[in-house]
Length: 285
Image 1 (tube, helix red, strand yellow):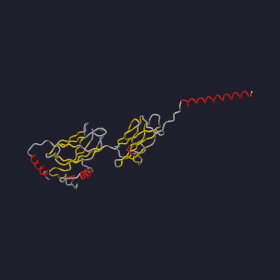
Image 2 (cartoon, rainbow, N blue to C red; image 1 turned 30 degrees about the vertical axis):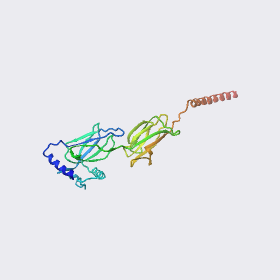
Image 3 (cartoon, one colour; image 1 turned 45 degrees about the horizontal axis):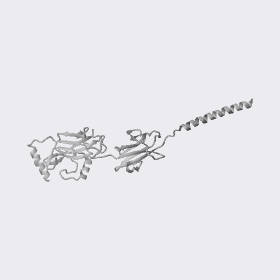
Image 4 (cartoon, helix red, strand yellow; image 1 turned 60 degrees about the vertical axis):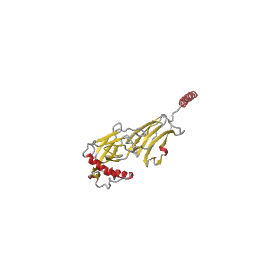
């Protein structure tokens, strides 16, 4: 309540004192996997205006049964953001630069919904609510900076092993992900040396080997991979520690001795036929 009164007083002073233009800045933090922070897009929608120190819902959100002038718990804010995501309001667009930064200038005072609509190559993020201005200690800040909470995708590790010896295969391999089981709509190709690391950006997909290690047969097996409650499953079975062992069978390549042996056998049979023919011819005479 004290802050609300202070907000009203400061708003009154703002009418006679010059105030810097309001802005909303978004700054993405580095991810664990050092993913690109560029070209991440946010939708910025004003939910309520600030009138005499109190938030008044905009016409589009009049049916939203929420009083933003009271303290809200984190769980309540999450529920509100989930509801706001369903509203088809265009709003403004923010797109980050290569440093993961973006700014929206000359913002009207009020409450704003920040919705990540395209994470591009970055991590998962949740929508947010931000007030302009916002309290920074005992003062009001008109240049609001947001650091969106982010969390990494689950990571599937595929290791190649020899079907017979069970030893790890350290050679170049390649897998491709697909939308469908028939593998007609590809998503992305992953390459590695014996081991692959796949970020599960899609909650469900099919993966298939598209290049086998040298000296091994390429498998036609198609795996259905899905993420459920932050855990990875392959063909309905939970993947322990997110690590999956993929077996490959060695190609059967005849050795040099076997090859030459076959030639000798063939030549011997030919010689035997010739000898028998000569003997038969001599006996007839």
